[in-house]
Length: 387
Ligand code: KIV
Ligand code: ZN
Image 1 (cartoon, rainbow, N blue to C red):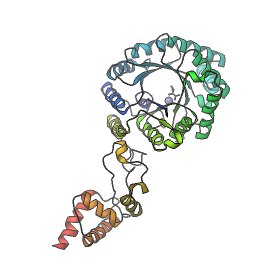
Image 2: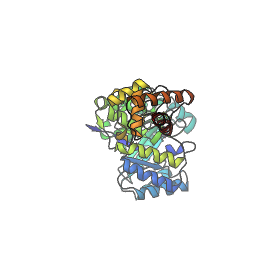
Image 3: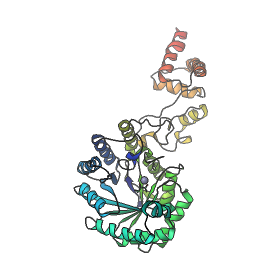
């Protein structure tokens, strides 16, 4: 089975998310958690951006052992030198250099012609290769670039020594079937593609970041760039937890494996949420409070008989300890009995009937019935009645 490398950019693109700034200590704590999670590459920051970023990248490089440590830099000599300075003591350093390749970026942002951009890529990658053979090149705004120009960009980067060519959907504009076709086109047309790994980096402006990344893997991409909880510029990046669990759960479609220890997914998301002070939305896929909660009576009944009726993965597989049954007005008597058992009360048929009625009465007045409410109802309605 092919390996898909997980490139985590929580500490670089993720930190560019409004409200997600982390101090040095927090970045190191998060980097250690990412190491435990099993990511292959940690993008630790953008060293030229500020002295603080430079020092954070240096500190992360010293703090973790197994993952490769990438530093981001524009495709100019000064940026690359500064990046190398920050990552050079990492056990496995990677220089990640980027340049825009779309017409709109080349003309309006860079003020460069296509030929000048090709020359800059050649020079930047060759310069980075003087420091290390682990060089990634990113064609910023690749998904809005001319496909044949992208072929030339990729060939230039690979000839100059890049071992990873990243094809970002920088503005989250592409749709999954288009992205699939683009990656396939590159695989079929880039002359020297066997010497490099194709990587993807998707933003979530149209809510398609995870779907796009999965489509790209299906087309042959073997590195995915993502962030924990999908934090990142604007609407964010592809969420690591969604991507990894989709690849794992639908192995028959993707036929790839990652090095992620999935039982560390929930602890990693919780760690990030605590550090940046951003709660995990209850309906967040994989790790939201409701992701494994079953409120309707029909669903609860099914899950109690056989979890597979309504669950496509187990809470334990992502490191969640319990399968929360939420009691509400749609709950059935089986779930109410189970909840009572979870709380330590073994009720007979008549007692369950009494409790079930009491729960329904309360649920009509209250949106969610908490464990404490159920316990109070057991004590008040069931036992007092019996006494
Ligand atoms: O979104 C993007 O294009 C980026 C690159 C620097 C990889 O973040
Ligand atoms: Zn990005």
